[in-house]
Image (cartoon, rainbow, N blue to C red; front, side, top):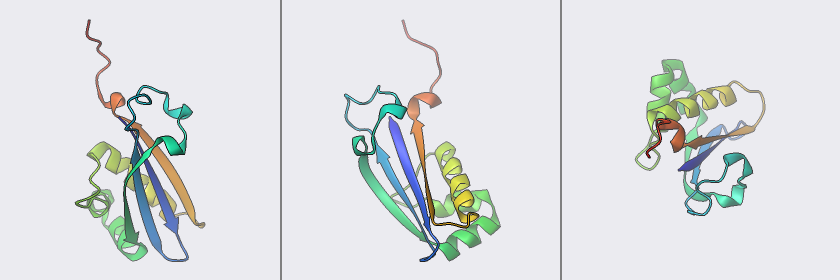
Length: 116
């Protein structure tokens, strides 16, 4: 499954938001991620965080930030959660209101062995 996480930081409101989307259309499942458009992804959820909470969590370390970002509605696997947290740190350290997108393909987590 292809998943996309859009992470945004609004410095004026001191808020972070993470939107989770995924390809759920089976006709798009094997399409190269670089050829997909935003509208090909189905919206799954969005979580919002106060800048103060994120800053405090960053100060306590990456593991604490991962724990802060995970919620009952937003609980990516650790591999993805760490990369999301690293992106949150980069946005936090940026001077601008910014956003970034991460795309993950679950096939990359599987072995390359083929079944014959």
